[in-house]
Image (cartoon, rainbow, N blue to C red; front, side, top):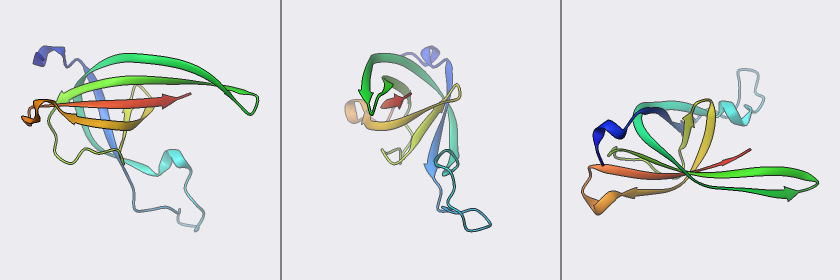
Length: 109
């Protein structure tokens, strides 16, 4: 991997401890995560599929993100990329050398 390939900005988000607003009502799901760190990454779409559930069509996209190694990245986080949200489904420390991370993300639209 060449550092020049890291041309896209992504934001890793973590689940907030706060689950309710100031009035005690549950937060909407898109507000439960807070930005953790914004980094440069390479983005590679891998697979797209379409499926039906309850008379509704959904699209699922699987994308590979490659970035410099950051300790602590796990499947409890999510990725924000171009106003799109990806659930992290796998994190690989490439060659176990702590240089690069390969993060598999899934977006359901």
